[in-house]
Image (cartoon, rainbow, N blue to C red; front, side):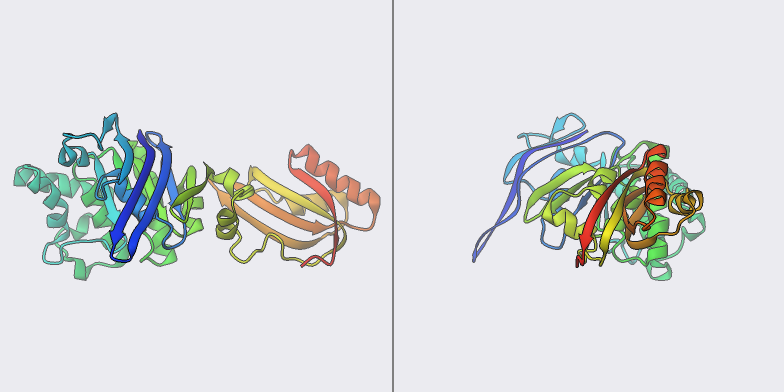
Length: 333
């Protein structure tokens, strides 16, 4: 378990103090995939570096796996062996092969070379590139480099993996592959993963809970599905609805707002509703996404003028357990 209590980090510059993190209280459970999201300058990268004390907090305490790392006399180097870390730019040693990059943290911790090479080859198998052992970073694609970086981070068998914008330098297809790999590793190894990102799609794809950071504070914290359906903070709404799309549609008269908070993403709810009720309806606005195979978000449709058909539509949604409400709109922009 990772526990941060009252963590603050202040940098002192010639222009005065800069508060990168302020009074952060956060608990991350064992085996969880936890996301920290925010725009540039929010303090999220500083926060993740406070977890392994690459950045020493100005105040507050950091406890990892029962050890308070901020206590005097703690063996920080020993504690860091339980915490692997990935970076946006991979940070591979360009003059070493993939195998040698993975061996590096083992060798500096005293592991014999044959044992280190055996472990490195096992990890290359685990991350899906066993044939790249002798390739240098310049010979690898971005996705392959990140797989080597993942393998290197796992070399010392850590209990925690910190990912600092680890997919930001990758294209969408490669990002999806790396996220799937991380999810598989979490399931296979039981490793706790903390992901820093500015992309909501990364959080939706892989995380169970999320903390939204803004101006060095945690503005919102909760389950990903709950935050997506009903963001409470201004920054949460901006991240989830980047163009204010939750309010931008034009409608007149009675409309039906449908809220999806866990319906299977593969069930054609709206199509089935129109078929059963025998009336079409005009979709005015939709913002739904699949998270772990379930649909979350909302949709606004214009109800048919036939009142009987409109009542049948609401009754259908009620039977399916899908939240809905009739609302009056008059040229809303």
